[in-house]
Image 1 (cartoon, rainbow, N blue to C red):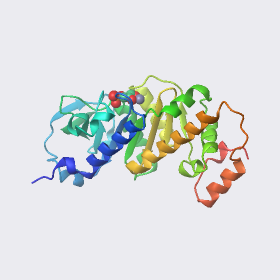
Image 2 (cartoon, rainbow, N blue to C red):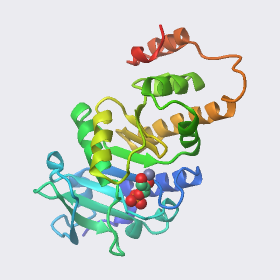
Image 3 (cartoon, helix red, strand yellow):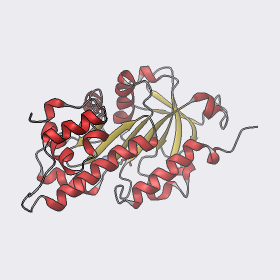
Image 4 (cartoon, protein in one colour):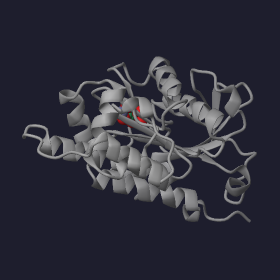
Length: 272
Ligand code: 13P
Ligand code: ZN
């Protein structure tokens, strides 16, 4: 007898985080998507893993992820609706032996499929797992202030990171590895997926110019917290950028923070 999938901790986490992100105004309409690498034995407590509902081609190769199981938001689905109807708005997929097919194990009940940004998600998982085997979550969102900042701040990753670090004392401690930045690119493509994954080898946060942000982490909380901290810093920037700057956090102070909290930070993003 299998347990009720709606009671699975990973389904509860997906419901809670999408509701939270919607409430914060980061994920209008179908904006944003999440993928979460699951433990096979844990999923097996809820689903018959030999029962494939449908096979869906992905359009790219993800060989290192063969056999891996993910819960993924559906394309065109609204974050505001996930909590009320997880089985329609979410799906659980396993990557087939060919590396290019998703086997649907649960969800997408209305005949839907995984997010159009699956290339960026799975390629980012591959990139992050290669540098951090504990990585589990990839999250994409359109946070309001971060997006606004994209229009008024240079899209240079050293400068963008430095400005964010200046906006809240906690920033250099929370994302000492900085923020990668991509120019505007066509979304939903393998190309933007490859470019994102390339950045993900170095950064856990990647800004998509004039579009939004990607975050990656070991847990849902860590990943959400990364994006939340960037968004807070971007908000402070947007509240202050057209006023004279009287005070700031100086680079020497950021060094003291990084050293006190023992984080490995991008020294080349500071002007020491
Ligand atoms: P999906 O609805 O396909 O997940 O796309 C939303 C989005 O944010 C595209 O970048
Ligand atoms: Zn998007």
